[in-house]
Length: 231
Ligand SMILES: O=C(O)c1ccccc1NCC(=O)[C@H](O)[C@H](O)COP(=O)(O)O
Image (cartoon, rainbow, N blue to C red; front, side, top):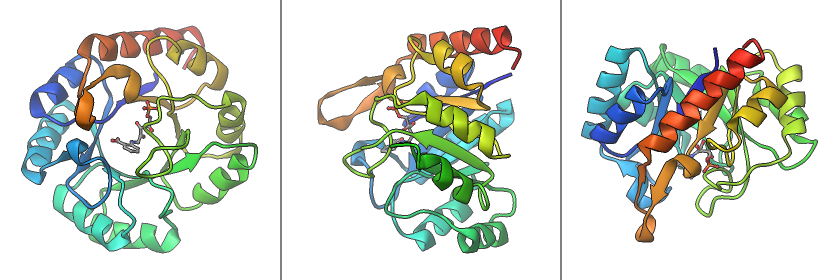
């Protein structure tokens, strides 16, 4: 079984369709400082989407694109995600942040993004794994955060080394879509795979929406590859 994580949802309707198309984790950017304004989701809409996901047993992820740990903890307390994803490079979580998150939101797990920009990413991942519940390996460089949402792949042999060297679940991100998710799973054998750009329709001005046919194809191909390699 492989976890299919689909980002970045904006509306309730596309969230329901994304879950129906096979997503195991859904992620969105609750209203906050930082990030592309068109992707931020009002907190009332986050509540509605997360309630529906919890009803269906789908894991909810709140994506943090700001650099203020206090704001992150306040958002976690307010929207109660299953996972808080620290996505930017300008703030990286640490053990103190993990402890604070556990204190204010005991049920929320922590996922730290790892920039995969060379072999040194393996040591970076090992450090982050000391305080994280999940790692998300990702490509640079988004204009607003320095990591993620690039639509670009990176050297998967480094992800495979990360999976072999940490003992927490690793989700692979960066340029994954229906065209390459099978190859990625066969090469890395990760806990999960993530897709944003290649399963979205992007419009001028930064607005985007999920392409549900692409989401379905991504999930089906991921499941097929996972079954073939015995995951
Ligand atoms: O979700 C966002 O809107 C976002 C914006 C800016 C930086 C990162 C963001 N999301 C983080 C993710 O984990 C993406 O899903 C991941 O980077 C994969 O993106 P893509 O390469 O476009 O599939």
